[in-house]
Amino acid sequence: MSLADLLARRGGPAGRLPERIEELRGPTRGVVRLPRHLTWPGAREFDLADRQVRCSLYGIVLTQGRRDDMARFVNAGLLRQDWPVLRDRLDPRLRRWCERRFPLAP
Image 1 (cartoon, rainbow, N blue to C red):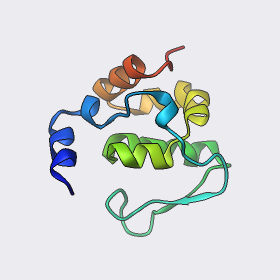
Image 2 (cartoon, helix red, strand yellow):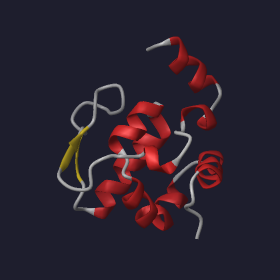
Image 3 (tube, rainbow, N blue to C red):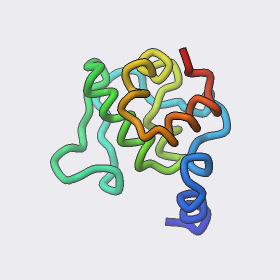
Image 4 (cartoon, rainbow, N blue to C red):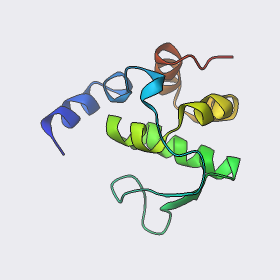
């Protein structure tokens, strides 16, 4: 982990979130396999076709991921689509930062 990553984590969600939603260029279909630093052993693959599974994936990445993880695994269009379900699963502080940074709020 780089010094920039450590400092971003200390700054909370604001330091980890990409500046613009357009930076979220994750896949829109298929199975995503997360790296070990984001998941527990055995729960690393997520089928994007299943909305509940995708919301779990996005919750993990938004909560635990670094800026580059978010850009790699979260898709802006799917995040917008899933936001009404996902927002209630997130920590209120993270939810507020996401809604301030990205055009997601209903």
